[in-house]
Image: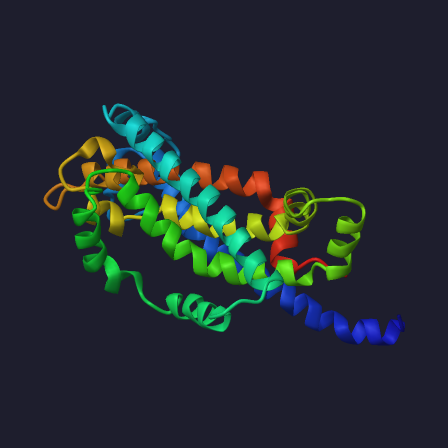
Length: 281
């Protein structure tokens, strides 16, 4: 590269890096304040002059969180809901994207439009109809009332994203596999599935976060059986209108964030590949 041209472009690159750093700080600051508040003593949290540090970290808020009798059950319920949504939505979206991309059938275009329209419907507008649907199906106060709606809402995004990955796999590869004696099922799971795995990981991250942080459905569908509640509902234990326990809220929120971070660390490499685009011919 021409040194003169490189010197001309360098200020623009520095500006872009500075902007990215500033955005990262703005995004990370609420998380930092949450963790900081979780380790603060009650007196520091309620102070009229808050400081962005603490000289006397305390674990009292975490003791109150883990001292809650049902907290472990809430945590396990959230894992079951989020894990079920991730696995089910990924498999269904993969099979649906493969069917729509590789086969021609009636109402194919209509199906694609329906998936697209489904993404535009706000979740809040469907909460009441879903409540009556779950009531008639006998699913209220069960984890199924949380799993099924999240699968339905995760499918449109996952389907459209995986459709691009499946479409990018050349048909010549499929024909070569059949010539070599591979069955359709073997091609699907041993050849096509690994190629679109980065896309599956990317969609799974969004499905996991949506199901893990859900409060609306948990509050609407889990009415009386608190043993079926999830972690977001545990925050209500510490939030009381007359005397909120902000330390407990922040500590519980910090604990809720840890599985999301672990999930990101486990899938970060494939996540970057999935967000970068589909496989190339």
